[in-house]
Image (tube, helix red, strand yellow):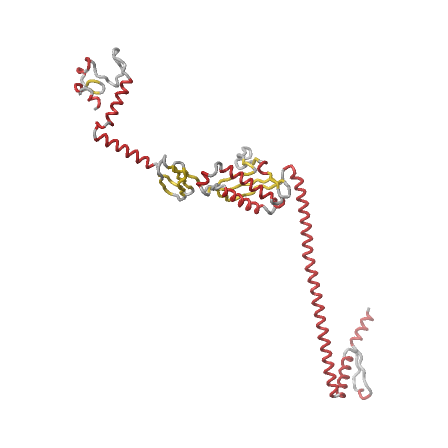
Length: 387
């Protein structure tokens, strides 16, 4: 050992003195490291000398004089340190993450696939991971408060921020709007290096976009049927502004939670809304009546026109038929006047007599005819007498 090289004459000595008590220096017993009792006449060891001795021993171990074994040990230590250093370059990317690789602090590449990756260990390259699948939320016009202890864990209170929520409409009215923006990271590189404070940037962009959209419309539209259109247009405008900033942020949705007039004028506004509702109701009733009476009048008019046309056609057709009949009779009369005149006389008398209630009997040649008894006239007289 190292202490055996100090003196060739003391090869049997250990680090604590002579192995043989009788051969110790000056006839003293060997030094025992676990013996806390020191002779009264023993001197206190020199700390500086001990440190110098330890440095010399270490220098002897790593010096070329120590031989091939020392060099081999240093090589193994160097290989082990190098292996540990290279092993720190492995990293894992989760399915919802993206990894950004930096070389001396400058962007090198972005890894979006999940799995195991490798980079040159620090301080040459470093890896920054961001969650690109998590939906983040920004509140505009209000702040959610912690659950109330009195109402229970399910109750939440909202702190209204008037400087963010009050906006001016196109018809010079003030409207109080609370809305939420849902967003996520679309490009990890731009998100990390193009903007300093992403949440504050999104809040300012959302407030600016919403104010621009509200300023282009009327308050009635924002309070009633225009909410879906406002959400869609605000999302489109926000995404365009963030893309111009190269922020790497993707807007998922914009949700309007509350659209109301300011609190000091809400009663007057409700009265105006009720008056407008009554006006719309009356207008709708008038429109309903008009839609009922006008088609009906048009239908009656068309019916009259069609009836007149049908009567016209019938009269014309009848007149044409009578004229044709007259001409045919005249042609027959012209060919045989006696026969035609007699036939016309008989037909005329038949038409006259079939509607008459009287029977006319001729001279005595027809005396064998039974007298006619009108039963219907007798029944009529009997009913009149009974009444």
